[in-house]
Length: 197
Picture 1 (cartoon, rainbow, N blue to C red):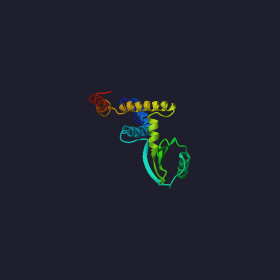
Picture 2 (cartoon, helix red, strand yellow):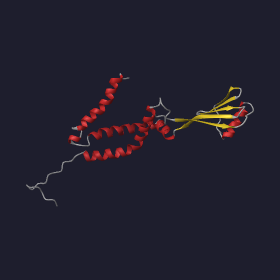
Picture 3 (cartoon, rainbow, N blue to C red):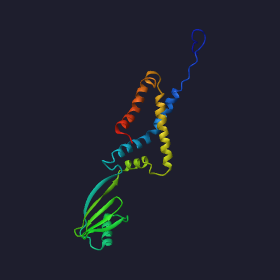
Picture 4 (cartoon, rainbow, N blue to C red):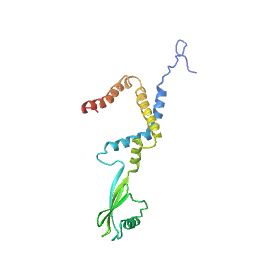
């Protein structure tokens, strides 16, 4: 049993909410990692949408089939069979007497029916980024809104709880206040310099 301090009385330990706050902050941070990666990667991708397509990558390939006789339907069926394509095209038309165009949503086959030269051009999805963008831009089912809202509330908790985790000079009453003000100043200064919305 620990000895009592001089005077015969033990001092009562003062309760602090900080250990609990640190535990909650830590666990919420771990829990938010997956969604933070989704939103951060997607945010970087769509911020540069003018420079590249964050959902698809373009490709081109050629194939030589030999002459493709017949009307548009017959010729397109022969081309699709040679490519192993079972999906029905969105449109088939003649751009010129010897140029058959076979269109899909993200793919076009340009067929020279005389020579059999086929230019296959289209887009392939960037799998992880396309899914992240789909979630980030809330193009999924309505239920995703509740998850996104809960994540936003979780980020608010992480931001606010983080300000109160450390006491003294390293906390909100010390350099923490300066860092918070600097973080607020960045968007405020940008809005002021850019002229705002």
